[in-house]
Length: 475
Image 1: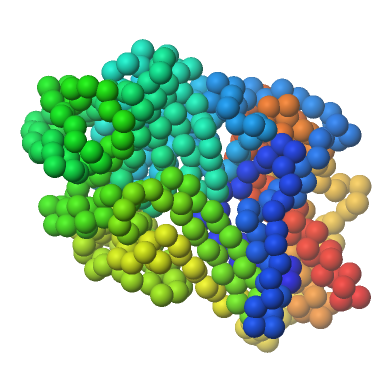
Image 2 (image 1 turned 180 degrees about the horizontal axis):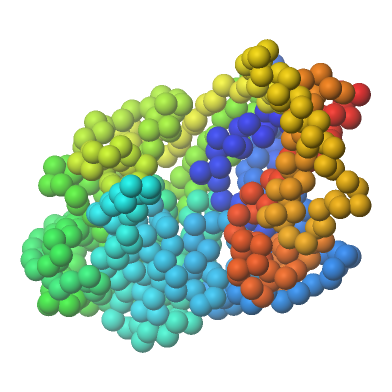
């Protein structure tokens, strides 16, 4: 089962948010389907959540701890180290987050800033897509204190951020794959402020329900605004403001082409507030199941990537030309939409089931080495093995280079088999395992102390352990 599990998680990494929950228990249930044992994980739980009191090197304070004011309401306190919204959480809490896709967003003292990049550049070696922030969503009662917002809930995909001032509230449901930015107001007067330019045009209707407005700034970014009950909005050059306090949801969506309005208008009334990610494993197939909790009437419209469409069960997709956003993952034809929509039926919209055929993990290449190269490779292997000296073994001073060096040595054992030639530390802030020297210096060990590239750093060690286990099993 383990090789298949590793295989499945490799494919699902793009949609997985790993987190450490202090004192949390993993949630699993087991079902029998078609004679095969399926393991379903409600969350991809941590390997261990017990205290690190007995760890060899003790504890060290991290110089970039989580922002206490942001997690004050999460009980028990939850520390997320691999979610798209960590820039909200890590001090100072105002850095740009790559999400909720297709949007990018930093948090401001007055509200949530967001935008969609429309510029993609190629310099001959890399594709670059600069950040573009178009709007700030807030409310007039908020006085701008950065401590006046907090996370109220999160899951494997999304986070809800609440801004508060007195009795006025604004909850931002920040959900990846949603076309719309969603703000629920409670006794608060909505205020939207352009961030790149001033407002060039503003028009729409305040009633009947829903109220729909269109705004374009002087940088030619167009957004459509949906208010789920009657509201009067007035625009100046630098803000759109409601006439009075509001008690419902306002949604905004970037409009790249006028034809995209058809889908956006049709599906604006239902919106997701939370998501659950489950894994199912069988003998020959595995599945990833996305389920969204929704509010409002109608069907849920969400965005897919092409690789989602290839394995989604019972998919019902609008034409790919109907709605899309620019990303770095598409071909070089910039006019093509490169982040695809999906929707059209309740079953598809509220739940995705992505099914994968599982394959066994193989250690050696399926193509054997050409016989004409065997002697040269064996000589090279003998030389490398001859250079191994126990007195000069790599010292575990960092994860990046030390892990890479050991993984390279382990690879020698795999090659030899194919050819037939038989200090960790727990930070007090985040609760994870990091390089001690890197806890206070982001440049040490490629940012290991700041939770950068852990999938590389610890992956090296796992590759070593897997090699040893495989060789031991093989005798």
